[in-house]
Amino acid sequence: AQSVTQLDSQVPVFEEAPVELRCNYSSSVSVYLFWYVQYPNQGLQLLLKYLSGSTLVKGINGFEAEFNKSQTSFHLRKPSVHISDTAEYFCAVKDTGGFKTIFGAGTRLFVKA
Amino acid sequence: GAVVSQHPSRVICKSGTSVKIECRSLDFQATTMFWYRQFPKQSLMLMATSNEGSKATYEQGVEKDKFLINHASLTLSTLTVTSAHPEDSSFYICSAMEASGSPFRDEQFFGPGTRLTVL
Image 1 (cartoon, chains in turn green, yellow):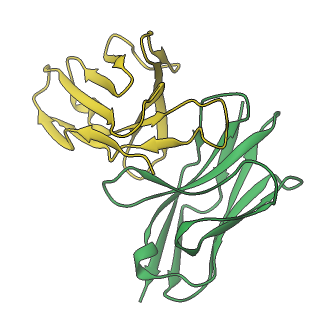
Image 2 (spheres, rainbow over the protein chains, first blue to last red; image 1 turned 90 degrees about the vertical axis):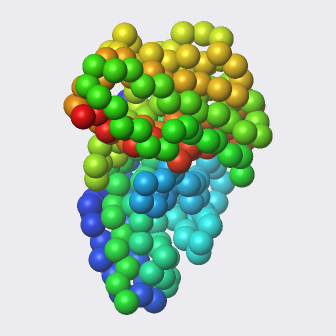
Image 3 (cartoon, rainbow over the protein chains, first blue to last red; image 1 turned 30 degrees about the vertical axis):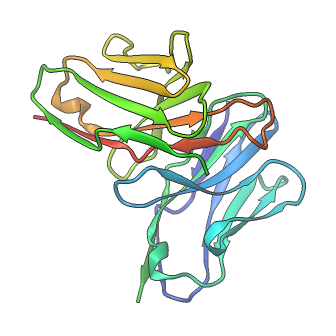
């Protein structure tokens, strides 16, 4: 079985500052990794995903994430955040042979002016 | 990307009544649909997985007689909360996937969610 740990429940940051949202996972099998964003009262939108290949994955809205197999991490980064990036961010994992996606508890990114 | 819609977006009902939530894939055929429940400021909890034309597979602890799921066509799945009680109040999110056999295309697309309030 897989599990996902998002180490920070809330991350406040000033506009134009860099940000890193941390995610660690555990699994006994190979996995795919995802980051989703959720704006208030909305569903989830895929930011980026790692399936295979390059460990540095670039997504929408200027976000990127790096897969680190030895540390079982998939941290999300953005070099300069905007007010509009304020949202809930979920890290998720799915084993390569299955359908189920397991979500972390979420990190609330709050960008201040 | 593909679009998944949910209806209604919000519903308020009295305790003891049943509520049906629809999930539609608008521009693709969803061989698999998922229903999630999300409590305030918490993550998504998978309730069940449904494949078109077959019975849904419920996660442990989810009452299948209370949360009836029907996936009658490749573009529509419904979740019916029967005899709803205040503790069923939550945000329900569906997602749909077109299983192509390739992980590069098997992306889950999420609906906007339905806010259920049971009085």
